[in-house]
Length: 577
Image (cartoon, rainbow, N blue to C red; front, side, top):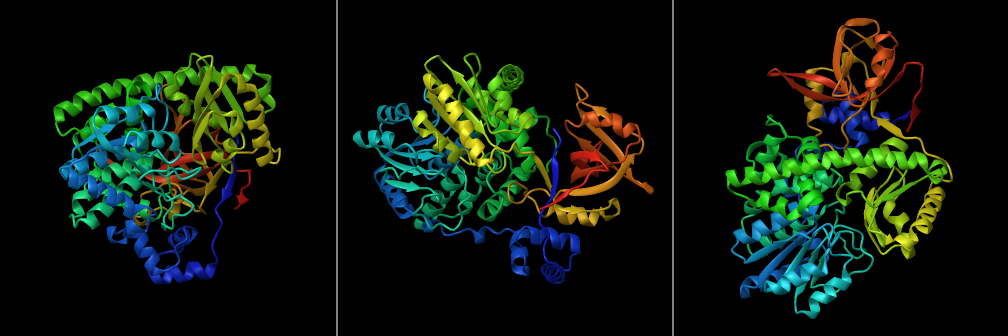
């Protein structure tokens, strides 16, 4: 699918020159920083040197005093506490963090992860029953609970208090002992982008402050928060940047047995673990446990302190991940065939598909694949004949949570974020829902089919790329939403010698190119799913590239290579942001 190339908004020359002089950096680096909202020396220092001292006071969060007071009461009376979390990466890492930290403090705790298929997303009645049956009188929910008022009322009827730690948009505030959620309308907490594990971390940070506990005991769990930040696609700004910066240092040095075992199974041998590695190596494996078997297995792995036990659990999770990949591939092919055969989908500005045979654990991944193919907001559902449930994925500019809210009368339940959501509905409402959802999307898009865009920061030449420039760019890490990897445009490139297709089905492109007019200055690169460009390039067509820069490790050597985002023939044009 052809994409529009849009340059990110450039800054005023005065702002760039001022920062350039203050930092003694070149114009390119100054421009990239100003584009990220950094205009002063102090802001740049905070960006390049994230400090845990910069973390906000956790007691600024609404209900934090109530949450700490209730947990303190449980500490004093020896109450048993159930740590309850969702089955995805954010939920399981959050549970691991809070359970492990409170257990280290000597509190009697148990943990519970709901069954994806029997209980579904969020806080469940079965979880409350488990707490009752196991004599737990306090439940701490993580990455869920803010939209589960009815189940919290059920817990209260059993004399079980609930402290909610969540980061989703609340419909109304449930009647819990405390509700910690920076997205509460009445919450003045200065950073709204925390994930569920981040909210759990802030709760434990407040507990440390209240009881004068050495905070370094808590900081040893920042690796878990970092995995959640990467997997949940929250902004890599503010507190998330600080937490992830220090969490990555942990992941690069001291790895808990479960994480080390997963990385071995993934074939990762490099010490320099990045957020990209977290997203593509660790997150899918942690998620695979809940998608295929049970999310509790992921917590069992992450809490394990025995290397042999961790290896055994990790091997099982690796099998789940292999199964997940096969299901993902097969269901995606099936879904694409359904779309082609369905007249409704040909004219729609959204995609909504279902099948009774599909595996519920991978529908979110399949939805993402369909967005890549058609660039439409997409919902993939499974059905048992009476009820449908599934996942939704969005495109830029479309708030899924808001759109589903306009279809709420046709849904049994929904929840999530701007770009990803979950939902369920009665099968009898499917056609009406599909029609309504598409109408809502049409209205948001002004009835115009959107064209996918690729944003880039700056146009440069190969001569601008050097080890010093790359070292500075590495200090922009960790990368993620609102601090994306800098993307550059270079024009007028042609094949030098070794451009070819690679991969099992020759779907990827291995580049070796030079800029026309300077054959001696060459760069290597890799373009995933861009193998179809090999033939035009081998036929000496001049091309433009959008790419990020990354380190390539091969045969014990490190080099700078292009991570290609998109390619076009040199005759095309770009659009200014």
